[in-house]
Image (cartoon, rainbow, N blue to C red; front, side):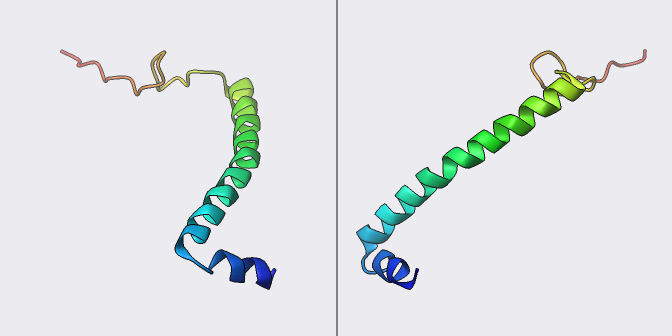
Length: 65
């Protein structure tokens, strides 16, 4: 583990490449988890919520005149 950190900090462009690869690798599991949770939430509560319009934007309050 220490060798990987030592290599990643050996130079600026090595560091940039290491961070790019690391963020790409970590993006996909987070994307999958996000989609699973979003799917469960929409199945449970429906879409759009009552306080939103069909686009998901907040509804404008109607004036009572």
